[in-house]
Length: 127
Image 1: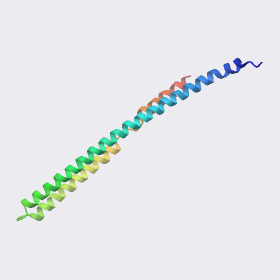
Image 2: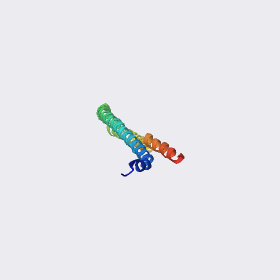
Image 3: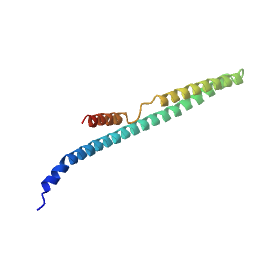
């Protein structure tokens, strides 16, 4: 009869380590999934709000442009339309620069997951 206890005893610590490793890996992958879902929800909300704001702002600017053009139609129509165009161009440049800045300063994606992986690596180095 073969002694199975001595073979299983040799593999016991290895199995526990592998089990722990895969358990940690599963937890981290679940964390990645949660972060992806949260980021998707946040981006969809921001996208919807941004599109709604752009649509309403465009409608307001069209109405404002028409109002100014009508008000100055008899006297300074070209100057009024040129002034409106300059104001719109300056505002567009300012918003484009602000958007670019926001993209460059965005938080790192999966920051919590990477932090947890770093902690796991330090724990395994100590052992």
